[in-house]
Length: 451
Image 1 (tube, one colour):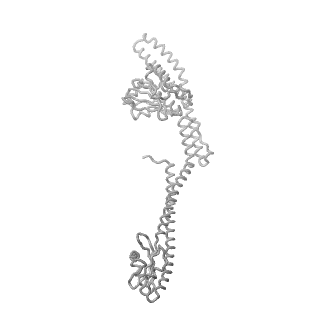
Image 2 (spheres, rainbow, N blue to C red; image 1 turned 60 degrees about the horizontal axis):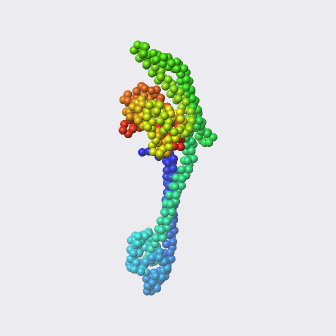
Image 3 (cartoon, one colour; image 1 turned 180 degrees about the horizontal axis):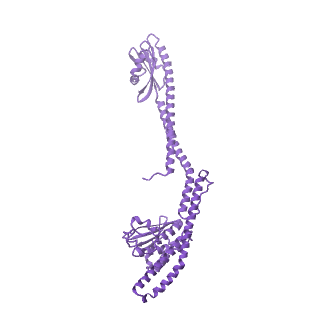
């Protein structure tokens, strides 16, 4: 499973922290508000109940009071429901068994002992407060206060706090995105510069003044790139100087070997064989020196011009004795690429030579375009390339494993390395896969914007 990016993890951390904080504050606010409102509601209920109890007690002072009329005289509205218990009998303004049954036994026993009390109960599925006020003797006045409106207030408060918590989490994620964008911007600059350097642009540098906190990192990075650039330049000059110095004696050897080769028929068999070996090795040595010189110049930026790659491929094929119809353009792709003609001529030549040397010859050369990528493919009908060698085959002087039939001793060992070098200089990459039906397929890909 792929691990989330640092930016994603930081944003998630900000959002989670904001959500946790807002949830904690919301729960605390809800509980404090709930307790405060309930306490206030309870004080109000007790005060109102005592007032109503005074009215009822006054109404009961007559000789033969009508208890129901006394209860009906109370202005209780819809949220208060009074009842009276006298001499073991319940009295209510209406047939109200639900209220009398809602009064808990513990509250009734407390009131019958002459002590007032308050208890939270449930009436018709809603919360309520039952307040008991003894009126003397065996008479107790009860009033049940509905908390339904208060419940609605609590639900509304919970919804508002939940929305605030969600909005805070979103705001936290937004803040995390902004902060991580600001914090990671220097690292993005480092990554961009490293990518440019990996692509061959050794002039890429970081500005220490842009981010003072990362001035040390920028200076160290620039110093590392300077050292790398100097080392690569030394290696390039060394390879170029050695190759250049070898060309003169090689030309002399090649000329001498050519003279001997022309007179090979006059030599005995052993001498003729030796001359043939020397001639072949000198030619191979010359090709190696030429490839080394090309690699030494590989860090130079390509000189891009409009090139008909299909036409160039046909020319390379004809120069190697292959029919021009081996080359084809896939679909309606535009075969004109903006590339360095000399380098891509060498790319084509090396891929076709590689197919001829190791794959029984090129059977197809395709130029096409798909999904924003221009591609060049060269197919052969050889043994293919083993999966473990498909990356290493583009290394310099790589030789295939003994079990791999492509790994013979022909060539300089630099042909495919040159292909990779030239393609990378154009901002693309090269890979090898299996060809449907057998063989290998070498594929060069360049981004459409770079070609």
